[in-house]
View 1 (spheres, rainbow, N blue to C red):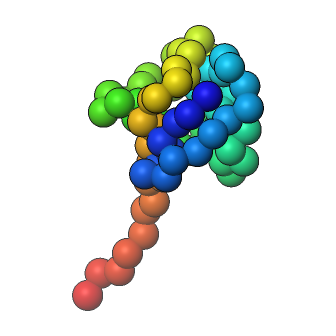
View 2: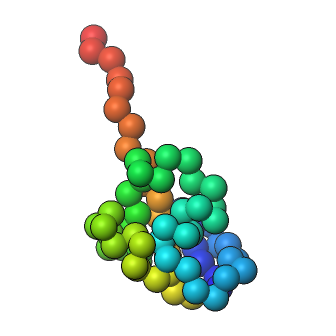
Length: 71
């Protein structure tokens, strides 16, 4: 299956995979801290186990970080 993940074209060996499985397949650290966008739509975390990834999907893993400084 051919996907675009974070702007990079990738080929995944599996023909069917959920978002949760894709996160594991791609070695995403702390997947509970990642938001996922597929084809421009943000997914609800509750759907990660049931939402299938499809050939040609454009997927973004978004990591939100806190921090910064006050000056």
